[in-house]
Amino acid sequence: MSNVAGKAYGMTVITPMSGKMSWINRWVFRATRAFPGTLSGLIGLKFIHFARWVIIRRDQWPDMGQGKQRLSHDCMLFTSNFNGTWDQYIDAFSDGIPTGLDLFWYKNFKYPGSIPITPFKNYIRNNQIDTDYYYNATPGIAYRGLTAAMRVRKAVLALEKKHKTASAEEFAEAWTHCIAHIQNDLTTQGFAPVASIDTDTADHNRQVFAYRQKGRVETRVQNEAVEAIFAQEVPARG
Image 1: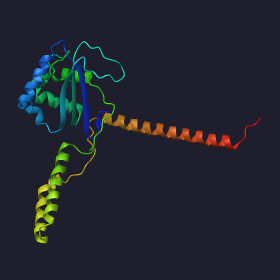
Image 2: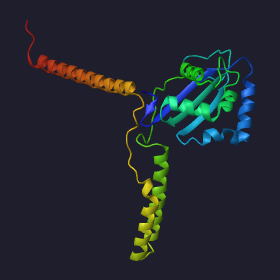
Image 3: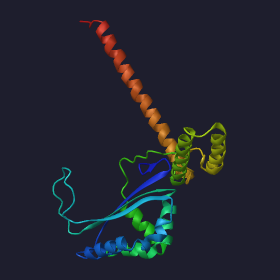
Image 4: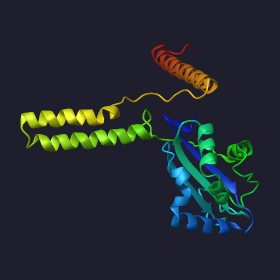
């Protein structure tokens, strides 16, 4: 799946906004930046790496060769990166900041509200755009693993600094104290948990198909090369 890279999921949602009322959403965003405590229910969710809402005005769409766009409405762009499954993420959003979501998507076409959850999931699913390419620098590790690695690095650098001046006995004591302090952070990376047996099976079948296609292409190229060599070595018969 193009939206998944290791343990991370990338989400992109574009929704049209109603008429000329997008200025209300702009004021909502300004108020949220002024009072970030309104997002405390979201900030506390450590499995969410990033979430951003952007209003794209109807005359701001980039021209990538398709020509100047003529739109009658502004649009809302929502992007996010998170660990876990799609359903877990939407559930956490709806439970964490339901009022905030209703304000952010205020005056968006056919927005059903964040509660009940099923219409909200259908709204996100129907307006989500799959990514063409999604890169993750650390696919085998999630947010907690990254913060643990940062703590380990900090502790090792402190040991390195102490090693330059400490005696053997002092360094041994510092080493023991350091290992005891960071022992819970010395974890190993691994694959993401299987959230759906059907999805996992589909990924496996897709990989097998890709390998078979690659093998067929390589075989065809080899056969063509042999035929070309044979054609050069054997003179054409009159």
